Length: 98
Image 1 (cartoon, rainbow, N blue to C red):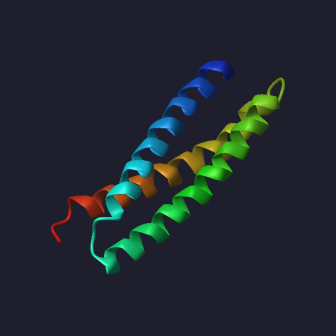
Image 2: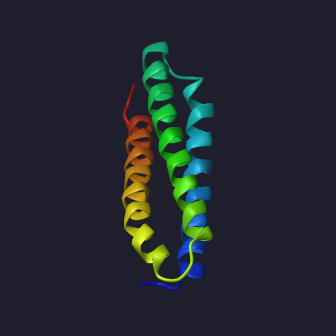
Image 3: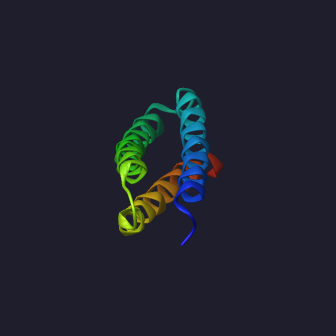
């Protein structure tokens, strides 16, 4: 496992990238058909819930000491996989012809 600081730095950068992508998708969603816009907004809301969970887990990890952070990393990794999947699903919707 990577050092705690490196791991947190990597996740922080990824979180910023995910957030920027979702913010961009949210802006683009305003210009799609109403039916698609509603679905996109729901998926973006679901992403935001996962993002909040990730931020809480990161905070706990930052505040942990010793080997505790390594135990927390498994939960963070699962949350990160969920966020990555959510961003991918939303991105696919913008690639599909309307």
